Length: 381
Image (cartoon, rainbow, N blue to C red; front, side):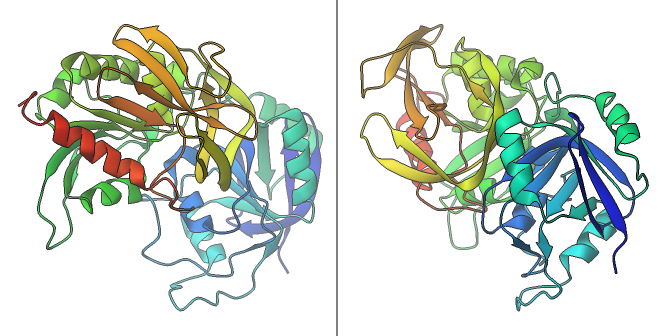
């Protein structure tokens, strides 16, 4: 039988359960993910750096861990909260159990019966700092140390998760190189450059702190700014890079944190959401067409809406790079989900079109990026 473990939130709320994964103690921001599948991709998504993730799906671990679906070089979550850990891994692709993977990575997890109660609490009170411990049985003492741990607001985490050196993702055999993309790794997932490579893009992945001059020195057909963790207000170097690239003119595409970088580059603010959007079932509407897509999300911050526009239509606003418009909103809460420059080849969305995991409704956005590069080819050669 597994040892007892303790989950404590910064407001003192306490859940007792059984240890899962590695013994020890971990601190991070408590959040929840509403996906019914994709726990391996969630664990290895760099956007979850310094977070304790609660899965709302009750059965976790039933497909084990394989060697194909990880989205980065390691597990990034600080801790993991589940309800019913599966005693067996039944997938033919499974190479090892989730419990073994967490132990090997040194990630402390907990199984509790109250994942629904925890999720409702975080929805009501908001994401907050927390700790999981198999070492302490005193929630008061643990809460005191939680309050001394760093908050997510003000955290510059893209530097922590980015690649230390550039690398290249080439198209699969048989697909010729059509475009060369410079992708700034703010916390990129493996599926993202692969999605572009399948469309004929040779993707040069660059460290998060790459300057506009370094990016443009590669003479790319387009520039991509990836997803990633932390507070967008703390990553001014990426905003400067976006502004420099926009001024030079090659097509720009951003997702998640990259979308927030574009928003800040266009003069908009960003703010922390109460509990964020995390899961694969978020409804997003394209304000230009009225079409609704079900999309994959993982973000705790958002771009501030610039102004109130005409009912049912995109919101337009002036920027240093011409007129821009809000193209997409979340139908659950009205949060800004997409931006586009009107007279320049630049756009971004807050969600994950690579769908790892998630639905494929938005996969066509990579094709739109390729279309922009095709139209821009020659003008910036």
